Image (cartoon, rainbow, N blue to C red; front, side):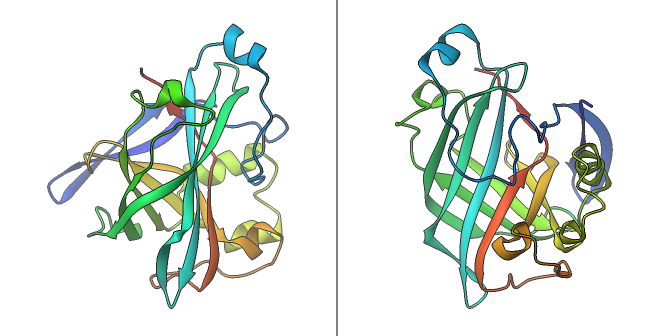
Length: 214
C-alpha cells in the first residue's frame, strides 16, 4: 500500500487528498522497535535513499515535554524500504503552537541538531524544522496497522495518531502513532482525548514514510 492521507490547509478549511508514500513492513523493520538499526557500509553504497521516516521519544513532566530528555529518530530507507542509516538526534527547541486541525489536539514546532553521525548526507535534504502533533488516530494509519496485523491487538487501542507538517503548516500528514512507552510495551489503556500528555516517556512511531527529495 502506498497511500497516506494528506490534509492540505487553506485558511480555516481543509481539503483532503491522497499523497504518495510507502507503508513500513513490520517483518523488515518494526516502528515499534526503537533500537538503532545496524547498517553495513556496503548497503549504503549500493542502494540510494528513496524514503525517510521520523520517530520521536518525548520525556513528559507535569504535562509538559522536557526537551532535554527528548529526541527524534531519523531513518533513511531504500526504495525497498531497507534501512540505510538511522540517527537519534537531540532536539534544540520545541514550542507548542496552535493546532492546524480539529483532529490534532497537541501541536509543536521543533528544531533538531545536525545529522552528523550516521546520516550526514541527508543534512541538506531534510527539513531542519518540522511540526509534530498528537491527536485522534487517523483511519489510514489504522489501515497501515492492519497490514502489520496489529490492529486487533489490545494495546493498539490505547494509541493516538501522530501528525506532521514538513512545510510550515501548509500540509498536514497523518503518518504514525503516538503513545506512552508502556502502551508500546503491551499495556492496555485508553487513548488520550486531549492535552495534557500523561507524565512519563512518550513515543511517536512511523507507520508511513516520507518521500526523500535531495
